[in-house]
Image (cartoon, rainbow, N blue to C red; front, side, top):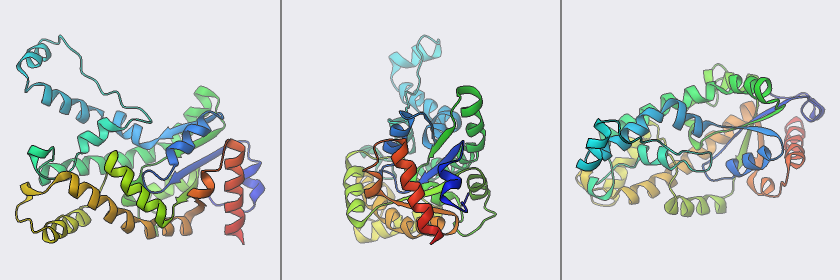
Length: 288
C-alpha cells in the first residue's frame, strides 16, 4: 500500500500498518504503545504460537511431563491440565519449542529435529501473515478499531521474495497495509546480539542458510560431531550471522513495497499521533 500523498494516509478514516525488522528493534514496544492509543495490535508471533503451533508446543510440554512417573499417571487419567501461557510480551513457549540445535545434554536439539520444527514454523508464519486482512476486518467489526498494526517477527523476510510483487505474502500485506521497515544502526545490531544472549527469541533460518552456517560454526570451532555443538554458542553466533544477512533484504523489501522509519526516531514516539507523523515523514521522503 503505497500512497500518492501524505494526506492519503494521515487523513484516512482507517489506517493499517505492518511493521517489520529484526527481532528486538522496537516493533513490539511500538505496538504496545499504539494499543494504549486505540490501535488494534496483531502479533504474528502470538498467532503462530497459539493458532498454528499451539498444539505442537503443548504436546512438547506433555512429552517432557510424561518422563516423570508422577505426572505421567495424572496425564493419562486427565487429572491435570497442561497449557501454554504465551502472551504478546512472553514468547518463551514458542522459543522453547523451536529450541536451538546442539548437544542434547546442554538443552539442544538434534539437527534433524530442529529442522523439522523450523519447517513447522515456516508454514505457520506464512499462514499468520496471510491472516492479516481477516484481522483488520475483525478488529473493526468486532471491537470498533479503525487503526491497525501488524507486529511481525524478524523472520518475515525469510518467507517472502522481497523483489516479487506476486509473492503471496507480500501481495496480501501490501494490498491491505502500509509496509514499514524499522531500521536499526550498527550499534543497534550489537545491542540486539547482547539482548539475544540474555533472552533468546524465536528464530527461523532459511534451510540452506542453516546448513551452511552449521557447517561453518563447526569448522571454526574445530567440532567434528553435531552432538558436540554448544547450543547457546551456536544460537548467539547464528543470530548475529542471520541479522547481517537479513538487513539488505529488509532494505530491498522497503525499497520495493514500503517505507523506512529509523529505530532511533521511533524510540522518541510517545503516542499514536507521533507515530502517524513518523509515517507521514517516511511517505514524504519516498515521494521525493
